[in-house]
Length: 291
Image (tube, rainbow, N blue to C red; front, side):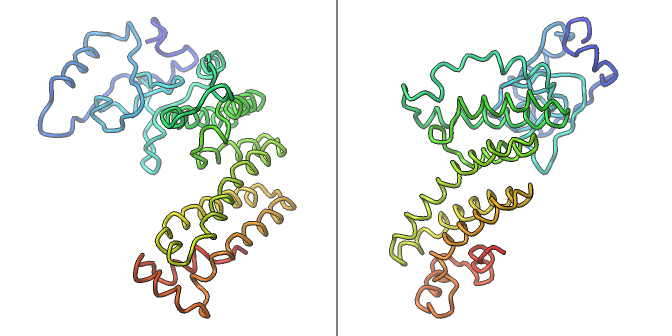
């Protein structure tokens, strides 16, 4: 693996002497036998890559603990990196130097440009890009490579802007990342852009009748919780004045839905509990005013 560059010399001490795999299931299909045969005969002379998008153990021929994220795909390496069972989608190790060079050389075409329409599939593809770049950002911060971390965050915001790509929960790591590298203004800008989307949604929901709000309570609660998680980031990073202002703003949006928990509004509450089966303590917890 060192001879053919599968693993860099600096990681030589991490190389495992052998890899044991535990094959699950009661049968081996031809496609998995073919994959195992390729591994058996390759002898590490050429890199073996897996594309993302699949997460079952057999898709990675039972070697999920031996992956390295190289941009958008995973390379098989004899270095053990156990999958975090609490977050199984973050597979593999990250060689920040290698991945940074790859990412910074990507040709993004018109991504993020006003010249094209960012259709549904384009926005979906952004999930992988944002997620993988967020992992690289985190690794660079952990290695105290703050200038490179800022470059990655800036690149993601430039090529996959909030308005064009949606999927706003994927932007939380970038807000946190900017705070981690003391780029408060950039963190606030991303926060404002994302929080505005939830504010627009909640403004729309609040304009519906109580009956329709009850019908869409799942969506309303989801937007509230995601908005709340953004405010929590400001509190976690102790951005006091900005957090106080944004918390007050968040609370004002919550008040638009207090009829679901206010004892004086007796007509709305039974409808919520009967139609959506939300117990009172759950609604109180979700829609309660933030301290």
